[in-house]
Image 1: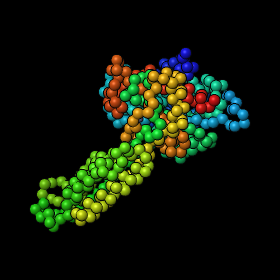
Image 2: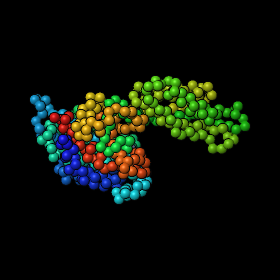
Image 3: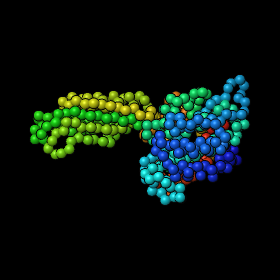
Image 4: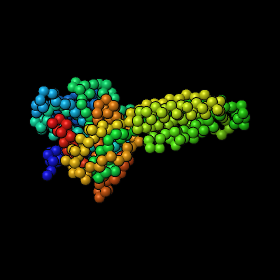
Length: 398
Ligand SMILES: [Zn+2]
Ligand SMILES: [Zn+2]
């Protein structure tokens, strides 16, 4: 028997598709999503759902109160559902009728779908307020792809008044077929921290290296030695990545330059590992610089924390997934990714879970990875995302 949530989501499938296509055609970069914000607000106006806008710039928070009395004396709970809104600086190569109308900007991470799904959930839950008690907060968040809109929205108070008991989000996943979801308890995304090392040597003539302190040799040693952190210092069963993505020094063949710059990313799945990487990069840099007589500046730039899914909520979500999609369409566990996701800030403050929503359709040729200029989704995934969100909300707020 088909789950109610899926029947309701199927009914508004066309609306979600049209929302997704409208947003896809007019993508906006991080923290510039004001047209998208207006689009969301006008849809919420039509649905007569109250909201606050311009939170952390272009964020929107809608609120729907359940009509069912809460069990016994306890007040109803509050569940937060989150969608991100921003697009990427990328030229779309798809030729679909709904392709991006903006040069050099594209929804290549599926945030258009996330927003359309959450608008769909707004409509469904608003139409079925008799089915739950408590409160649902629906958060449309800017800036996920850059410095993150989650932390400023939390600072603006979205987790308070009323206090949120749990948060849930989804991300489209082209590694899974549409109609399938994946839920993983524990670490799901990494902390994508950056580090920058400036080595200060002493410049000189390329013919007289003994009178100079060569920052290039020093930098080369540091880059090589940094690779021993993951191979020699971290537990083989714990995931971490160190990549040097930029190395700059000198302008010509016969001059030893004054400085060299190393810019890299250090990624971990726990805060403990983040701090360990920070410390080891410093120690290696210090040791090598001392050995070569160079000075250095070191910055470790903490970005998003690792996203840790709450195990209990993840199991609850699995129940919803099985109910809506059937057990064989719910993948449990699997590997985390070393990419970052700023929903992690919600998860740091409150029990949270983010699940992966399959959007691949091999028969239709929809297989491109996210952040590809040819990325697209099988739009049937919109109804499945909305149905799982809805079923989870009804169970959580029963
Ligand atoms: Zn992305
Ligand atoms: Zn994304």
